[in-house]
Amino acid sequence: MRRFRIGSAFGIPIQLDLTFLLVLPLFAWIIGSQVEPTVELLNQFGGNLDPAVLTTDLLPWLLGIAAAIGLFTGVVLHELGHSLVAIRYGYPIESITLWLFGGIAQLDEMPEDWRQEFLIALAGPVVSVLVGIVSLVGFVLVPSGTTAFAAVRFVLGYLALMNVALAVFNMLPGFPMDGGRILRALLARTNPYARATEIAAEVGKGFAILLALFGLFPPFNPLLIGLAFFIYIGAAGESRQTVMRAAFEGVTVADVMTPADRVTTVDPDTKVRELIRTMFEERHTGYPVERNGEIVGLVTLEDARAVREVERDAYTVSDIMTTELIVLSPEEDVMTALSELEGNNVGRLIVLDEADEFRGLLTRSDIMTALTIIKENPDYKADDEGEATVFEPQA
Ligand SMILES: [Zn+2]
Image (cartoon, rainbow, N blue to C red; front, side, top):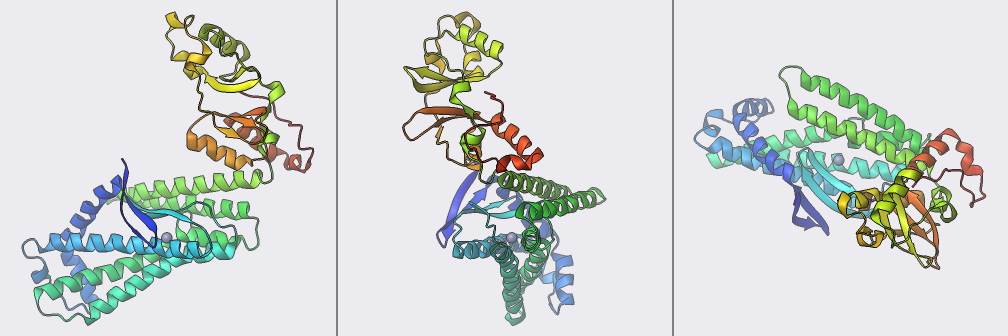
């Protein structure tokens, strides 16, 4: 199990990723070993703290643990900021997850209204600034004197600085940081959504490369390089998703599937050896299995290969086929089909109409071919015949 739940707030489950358990002690250790320079920094803001008091015995490590936990609490509050505004606009939040690089609030879908995205993105950094201010007020109000008070003030002062730093970092104008979403929202006022995403993603990739270069310079900083990698991947992924969603707008499964009359089906009693021969002859790696005009399963090259050479005459398609079919209706939109494919980690989906009649087969390569064609011929979508597909069958 990579993630486990630690609680919930406003009905949103809060989860810890395993990578987070590695980074929490690391942070505690870093903060604990930096108590003296941190005190010097806080004293420049009128901290009036005595480093000698705070660096005795185990105190630095206790401070490190308290500050690290405080820091990640700040991250959860930041994500809650995003989440509550998103919920207010009617976007459900599946969970908030803490991992190696902070927090993620999982939105099922992204708002395409620029005002909503703008406010959802802005809410996180605003909360961080508020947490910073509250910490600062505590830092100023708690009296100096005893060691316990000094320790509390150290943690509050540290949290004041770090939450403001967190807000500033998140406002960098590149995906997938909040600043990137704000940039996209502002660009989307005058550009199509997909174009706005592309620009914000390019800026994000540029930032990622700068950050990685920065991390490579001495002192070598692996955490910064990891963060750069995460930003790069996030930017690229977001851009790909949005480009596809824009390309497939209004395109249905029926438009891109291989229609039933062009799909070869196999009989459940076919021997595995024969099936493999057919696969090589027709260069298809998967077939719907048909019995009495009804689709009863799907069989793939992988299934067939799992049968040992010597047993391929003994086994038939019905022994090895998958009977748990993932079924789509022809009217479903292509993005839904794609998330079904990816979510179930399968290569092909069966398309059935309301009467459970077999209408076609939809594979990943059907979708990718369609994407290429639509991108090259934007006019294709204007053809509203609905029935004829221009895509070559590929199973
Ligand atoms: Zn954020």
